[in-house]
Length: 494
Image (cartoon, rainbow, N blue to C red; front, side):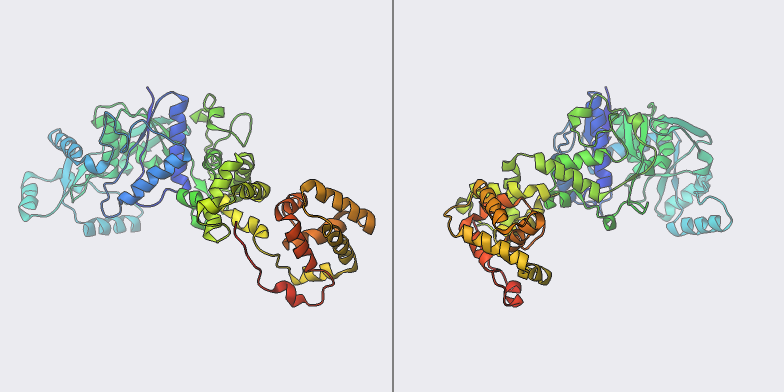
């Protein structure tokens, strides 16, 4: 059975790059009816924090990912926190010491750094020179009685490691260039290499799917698998995600953490969809799809070897597609906290006119790429229009004034203003003024909203109602003073 794992370190928030690795492991498991495992690599006690682990789990669940084994669901191969597996690493280290495939290294950090410096100056690889591997019994005893701290290093075999990567094909590494590496640090904690190899062995991991930045770690892991008498899993190293400038993705490219996308009101299915497009595309070239659409066709070998480029604009476009197709009730419910935070609606849920709110949100969501944008999109329904100087001049023109006067006169005869009635009124204004196109509707739009673009006018007037429309139009009739239109707007709540 296929068994894959996502093994993050809880030292910060989950970002696009790491989340993408989790997604493709999860997708691979679903494709092959396998098991997806969440393992937390928290042996770095100074940087790891439980709050990051809790947040990571929450973010993965928000994206729709589930796992069959992990710190919150247990499983037969636990514990799934590396900090709770220290005894396991100690036992394997003792076994390796007895087998004479590891040894104690007494070199100090200062000595190691000096040797690396000299190696770089002389054009040699800055690898460990293995000098403690051949210590005599007398030397070992002297170090031990001195109380000097030590690390445990693995005796790297002098060989060429060759493996077939499911994405990159045949890979080979000359282990003579690597040097004996540490498996247990001087404080007794396991190195990344050692903990990963032991855990992947005991958890029966069949495929390791991770970023290409780990490609150089793979030969170290393979020799450890061999020492553990375990056939190495199959490897697949995904290309990394870059910014538009082809540098590693960071916040300066607009790539926030998953929790920030959540907070901004992106739909999880949209973010999941977009991250699957980073380095992979379905054979039918569709850009919008669900996991169910591609489970039966996804092949890890189809992943691109080239780095993918994170495009915030494309994510926003895709997210907008999902928002427009989502259940209006869902988008309305998601909008409430944002609107409450700026005072547009009451914090008392019982005082919210949900029917009207749903109508407002449904009207503006076509312009949103994330739900937090609802605040700027709906302010036209809660505040009087604030018009720019350029728009004041436009509304003061003879053509605009004729449209506004005609429209205002017809509004004064109405008690209600539905979408259908508005269309009839607009037709009457057009016949009366002989003005068409933008010249007809733009003065009305700007007077009502202060904007040149936005939802359809008939939707706007249907929500504002005849009284508010008349009030806003009348502000701009026979314009005398531009100051009138730059004054602070009033605001109301529903």
